[in-house]
Amino acid sequence: MASFASFVEISRYNLIPLSVTSLCGCPCRLLSNQTLIPTRRTPKLKLNVVFHGPQSVFRVRPTSIYVNRRLITAVARAEPESIDESNAEEEVDQGAILPTTKDSFSELQHKSSQLRKRIVFGLGIGISVGGAVLAGGWVFTVALAAAVFLGAREYFELVRSRGITAGMTPPPRYVSRVCSVICAFMPILTLYFGNIDISVTSAAFVVATALLMQRGNPRFAQLSSTMFGLFYCGYLPCFWVKLRCGLAAPALNTRIGAGWPFLLGGQAHWTVGLVATLISFSSIIAADTYAFLGGKAIGKTPLTNISPKKTWEGAIVGLGGCIATSVVLSKILSWPASLVSAIAFGFLNFFGSVFGDLTESMIKRDAGVKDSGSLIPGHGGILDRVDSYIFTEAQMMDSSKRNQFLLAL
Image (cartoon, rainbow, N blue to C red; front, side):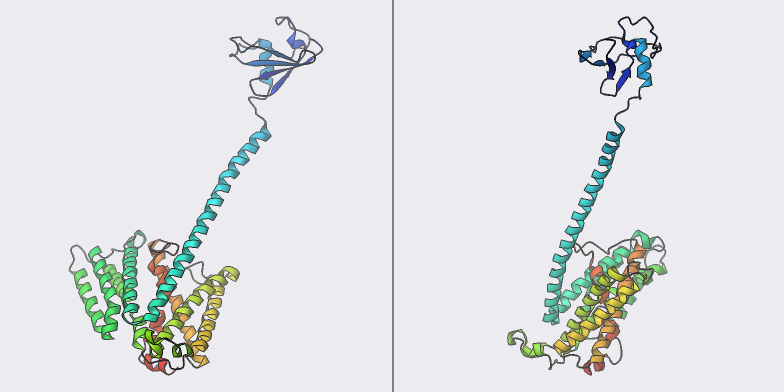
């Protein structure tokens, strides 16, 4: 036995090399190679003694034996309960990589799902809005009134959010609901009367009186936020009714109108208002799309602190796309006839859309929210989709000679 190399295996841990003399038949006699030093008695251990030689394995039964004092020193000199460090590090790395991979995969799936929802609902909204614009009249007005009502509800919910109410007292909830209904009636009154300045002024007076007479301490912040809501959500969208339904002069040079079915109104259905609305909607969509793509590709300079993701480079690309769309559609629809007028039309659409987008971004930033609502999956709320359209036609129509200007193009 003295010629064999020996190891002690403790459970599943490292093999511990021992000297040959330490495993002598007489455990009580201390030999010349004193590798083992007596120590105190230790707890029970499971030992497997492995020899390399003719006698391959000698197992010590895991019974209630106490380890010889000479073996304790060998155990103490061994690495304390050490598993293979490389394997342990590999397991840790795998454990760290696996959750990261799963999170990345889940995030990718979420983005893919959101993109599908955005495309599907975007196409649905586009087709519905296009049909309402082509139909005009009461169909267009009622559809606009429904959108105005939902947008007004979202606005007053934003006003009542924690971010805004931290610095002001929001209007009472019943006032917010009444104002949402008033905003929804404004487009209908515009179609019927043509001019609603007196009606809007009367409604604002009634709402202001209700705020001043409320219990508690009325605040100016309540009055200002309510009056802006009536103007922003109700009065400004009415210009779309004035543009689409108010400009009833036929666009005689439009080739599409010449072949329009008689059952759908014939050539008389293609009015200046319809053509102007189609060009405006298309130009705004082009402005948003080109600005987004341009900002992603070459955007570096922030446009404003209100919306840090918007850049000057994206705005310039968006302006070019808006003007190009306006010019191309003017050639297809034969309105306006002048190239300068088509370029001016694109300019007005672009700046109106940017101003409306930044205004809604400022409201959401003060409210501390990303989206104005969650009504449209993948898009957010109504205000998130129509913010670029709110100020656009107001810029073109809110002048003393708006009708003469458009008809002269």
